[in-house]
Image (cartoon, rainbow, N blue to C red; front, side, top):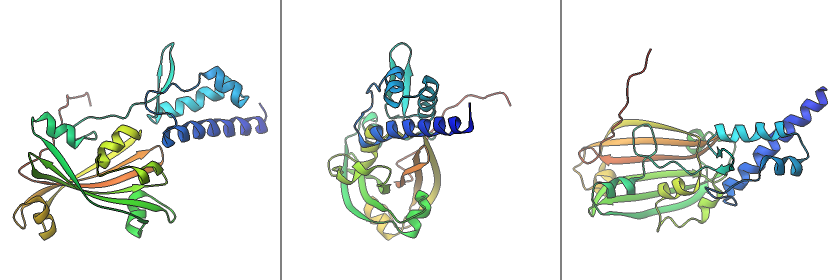
Length: 243
């Protein structure tokens, strides 16, 4: 193949991947939706099946789609699990304990990204973010404070989501596929605002979980979750592997 032929193939591969990803991100193709078959994409983009297969394989690796033998390719369903190394759903965790769950939307503000926002979200230019603060409750008692920023360039639908009805973390898990996540766990002594919100003494030990999630190269969100130290624990179970 000539150099120009290779350039066209690469361009088509990127275009197919980007187009499919856009459909998923905008919600045009929800979780479980069957995307067009390979031969349909080949006809639509007037390219080789190899080019289409390469684009789909990239999306599979990113966790955006899944392939089912003889059935086709489908938009992947977001993962909802509870463990140190995965993304927990606070509502599911509370109800799994047999406790009643509730939450309050404390504040919500769309604004231009600050220097700190750009650093935490990996943004290289000015962009809009959505800053959300929630209080989660278990058995009517404060369970966690959530301070979250969402990258509206990566999840534009978040701007219209009603987070007074559905917590932002639950909404993201149900609507936005993710490919990578990072958890940072640290100790934190409650300042006055935290102590008042969580109904704990000033200086009480708290668990701070800072999480970032990505979809391919775009950061979706950064969230700080602050828990009273005596009301929450993170557990991971694993088996040894050969060194």
